[in-house]
Image (cartoon, rainbow, N blue to C red; front, side, top):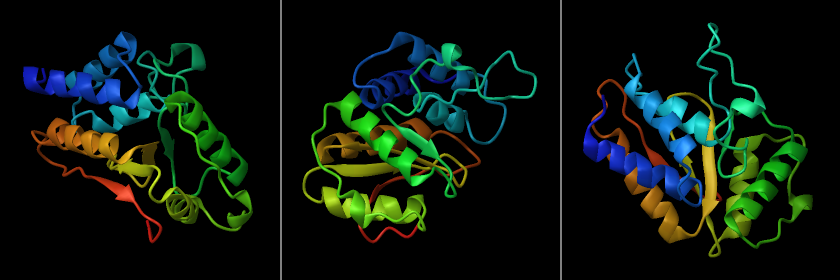
Length: 186
């Protein structure tokens, strides 16, 4: 079981990440934390669920659930991606989904991005283009994957604070959340 103060923090974190309370997603994330059997405290599963990559609890191999079993639409509020993926075209699609889901308005100068680069360089370039308008916040998910979203600075700071509170009582792994800046080097 997770502590009642963690439940409230999780509820606030999920609501902030999903632009409002979504009971199904919150309950899924709560279950992830309650059933965590390793040193990561269920946090990786929470981050994947919030990005639409929840594991199918009925799959004995722990594969990602089919779309109809996801508590959140994939990549709409937050993106989870490893350093070698996605393709640039997909990266732009993810950013457009975040913009639409969060009601953000900004332009991307796509010509400044290269297919030869990867998400590390793309995030740095995007952060530079967003300077002063919005911020990109990344949540450490105990892997080499990036779990990030775009919000105004105040919401990013609130999200980082909630993430810190959510992970504070987890023994075995130290989590962090941070702003991605134009000099981001992964």
